[in-house]
Amino acid sequence: MAISISILAVITSLHLIAFVLAIGAERRRSTGVVVPDEYDERTYCVYSTDASTTYGLSAFALLLVSQALLNGVTRCLCFGRGLMSGSSKTFAVFFFVVSWVGFVGAEACLLAGSARNAYHTKYRGWFGVRDLSCASLRKGVFAAGAALSIVSLVGSILYYWAHTKADTGGWQKHRNEGLGMTNNPTTFQGDQKNSEFEKV
Image: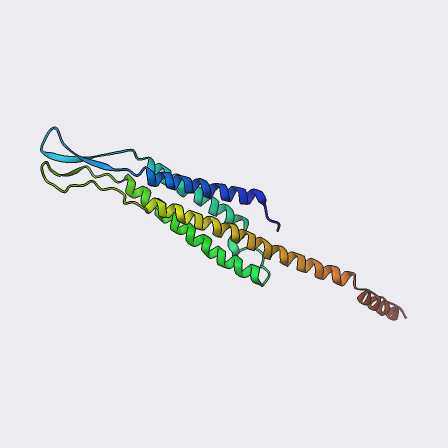
């Protein structure tokens, strides 16, 4: 199996777009301000835009599509043809694990961050009470998702490259073995002599 530039381009593009969306989600986290209720003495929270939730879920979906594409092409390492033993197979297994660790970590951060960012508290307490704050997502959750998406990208590309190299190596070896047996003059002459002996 040869390396497909189009598959690499799609996987890279999806990861990079997800990275940009995760950074955008981090920069536009929803924040709340405590304001007094005009009808009574209670206070409530007024939140800014929920763009981070949209960005985070979009990045989550893009990473999911990318991972599904990669593992569909490579048969998730376990269900395809056997790979040739050697350094390429070892690298394929190692970067397969790296790809999944980065993917699962990024998805967890993006999903948890999106859910937390969408959570809005309403009433916080009675007017005049100090030290009130509105629930909001802490800094760094979406940024961690962005960083892990890059880890997933690197792992995915190197895993696909190593998997393809190991798979192609196995095909070339079997093909060369078949050609060697066909073109071996000693084997051909021996078979011819045996055939003549049987006729006699």
